Length: 172
Image (cartoon, rainbow, N blue to C red):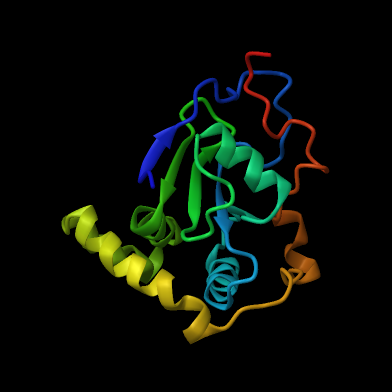
């Protein structure tokens, strides 16, 4: 899997057709049936005071479209992703430990301390990430379906059917 990739033709902020309210935010793509992943989403929601993060389950049509644009298999649920600068020309995709460290750094406060792990080689960080990912269902459980977010957070979750600009490249 890629640690970081740029999507060709990402929409620009100046493009008048790009009308998403979530332009320029970070979009977290997570396994919606994973107990650990859902706990992680709740953790971020409670600490994201500036509303920087948006969310989409990997099982959603929104995530499938985004991952396909990056050449990532949308059926592979073995990692989570962060689309940094979602909707901007400099948009890029982070996965595994790079995604986790980006989230911690953007949350700010004491969580910025976690960024110290960036000094470790990504291969080493990703080995630890992969071990946890491989055992996450057994340790943290699995839902039959993706749980719905609390009503106060629902606008932070994206869905391709509700967002006609999702998947536009700005060059169409």
